[in-house]
Length: 197
Image (cartoon, rainbow, N blue to C red; front, top):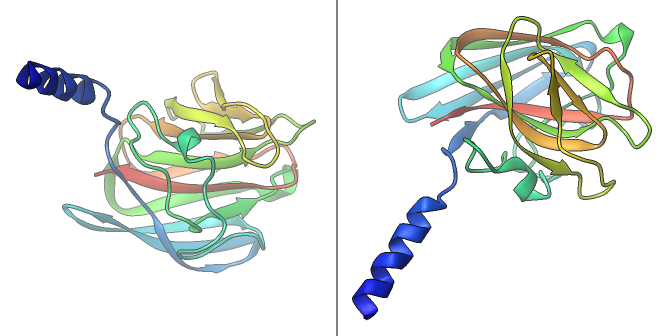
């Protein structure tokens, strides 16, 4: 009987396993402002991928490990994503018409990268991130730990919309460059990028 119960436990555990482990960017340094930049590295089992970002980088951005945390953790785990982003390691933007085009460039092609998003939109503001020509899927999401909210949604296949939304969004396919705009001004939103490892 004990062997049977152990076997059932193994089957149940295997059936509820989380998604893939995502190797999140370790952001190293930045230049802040509307025309800012940041550089980092993703440590994959197959080697390192360098990441360069050009676009809006506001003062709440965090290079490297530390505060703030990506919470609640459960809003960043689900679907194909098995782990939340590392503490700190986030680029913050306000968006709006002055923010222009934001560009993430990888030193070598990556497949099905994952975007971690913290607090997209505000209590009274539905904000968006527009990834033209890219196909997106929401993998996890939910309210922020401070302000409530809901999970992000996808419009027209390439626009992430949220109102105090946390979550992860997977970009389908193999890419070397990701471009997006943030047309609506808001209090602040943070993001990072990772790759299933």
